[in-house]
Length: 292
Ligand code: ADP
Ligand code: MG
Image 1 (cartoon, rainbow, N blue to C red):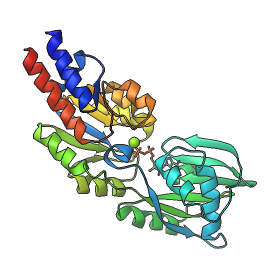
Image 2 (image 1 turned 135 degrees about the vertical axis):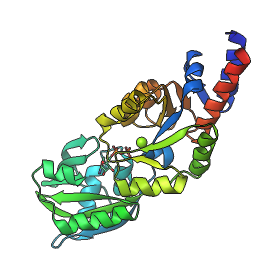
Image 3 (image 1 turned 45 degrees about the vertical axis):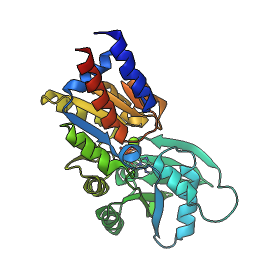
């Protein structure tokens, strides 16, 4: 290999907002046939908003949202940011004690002396909170519409539902088309529910979806694909994605994402736009051709 060609390649990459960890990375771009894309923050903007709040009597919607917002104010999750931003009324949020973040499930803590849980049904069940069928039905209808419904429990009782919505990045559909042009098969991977995942997949043109994956299991999805003979690129942004990014034959981090994701990756897309994922692979392959 001539170092000059590598420099040209990486220099052009830097101008396009693509940082390459080392020249050995170029070789993996040639063999890759599958691209696993994280959903939230990678394919979608990750800037979610609250679209609906439902509270079971005697809890009011304002009461439910206020307790959930207070708790979520301590979390960096996109769902948490949406809920904290939707806090009703003026003034500071109530203080939170014993805050806990349970990755892939939700958050728990004490707000004004009340035990509050916000997250998936599995989180409520873990705390021995019964999840009534009408609440699950409301969540299912939100999810069928492509949204994410998180449940709220107050003092051990399921009290309601907060629905949040995310939107694909404006360039996501074109980015997926670009990846296909390079001969790569896209797969959407997410901890979110199947309904929300399918809706995003449809909008951006992805056929294969793996949903409801716990953070610790994302790496297994990549490993299973590799064991099936696929050469896998993984694109992600979250702390949750770090192990999968490291396991992938080519790890690609969103520069707008977490340090953990960037450190685990071979390539970083500085501007966080998904189209540069295809640019990066095309440029790396072209650079290799120049060398050979
Ligand atoms: P993704 O893979 O899309 O980045 P995560 O693994 O972070 O998703 O989260 C999976 C699911 O866990 C979310 O869709 C949500 O239902 C629940 N969840 C995670 N964190 C929170 C939180 N802070 N508040 C409420 N729900 C949460
Ligand atoms: Mg993410």
